[in-house]
Length: 268
Image (cartoon, rainbow, N blue to C red; front, side, top):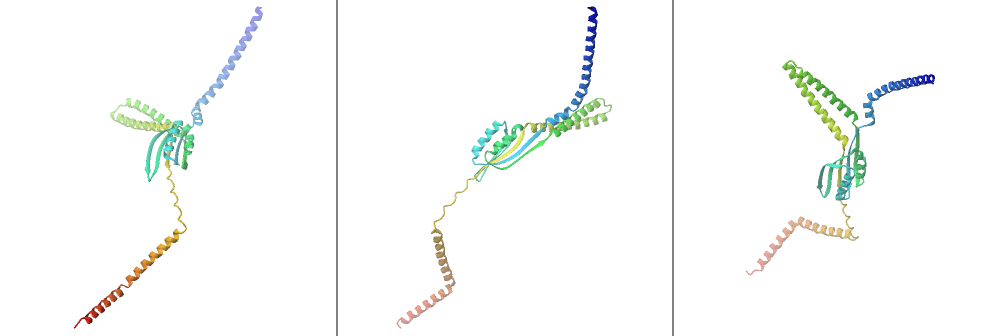
């Protein structure tokens, strides 16, 4: 019985050594793969998680300004958007409003489509921009400037002369300004990533004037006869104006003859 135990133990030992060898081999293969994956992690994230921002302009003509305003407010609530600014004007009986809307990017296209159904689209412009590279560039610039600032502070602590300390302090102010600019740029990118922007202009159509009732058939003839008679009166006045010297001379002669006759008939 003892003779059988030793071969069994020997076999179990060989099996354990073989399993350990296989695990070591698998570990050695997995480590380079993990290094490659970790080394390309940034590129992989950039390729799969693109940062796209949306902007748009919509010019809309509506039949009823008040109804359109109510519908727009309802759509903003449905799609999680809000008014960033609003400006309403009324000119010559026409009401119009300019809105700047902030919209979640996932709902931007659907909101534009829903707004387009409220009236007649006069114009629509929608653009999208991939700012992934810009965000990575700004982030890397911020990291580089922060690292440079840390190094500059270490050098400033070891400065041995006032002139050197003053120079390092000036460099520190420049680095701080660059860091503030990079942080502000990243904040702008964050706002663009969180909210898409839509400039909405909508106005109410003016009612078309009612066509005038057609004149009866005899009306043009009556107007033509009236104009003709008035033209004759004016022509007579013009003729009398041309003959006024003859009329004046004739009147003078008639008055003279009358005076002469009265004088002849008077008693001597």
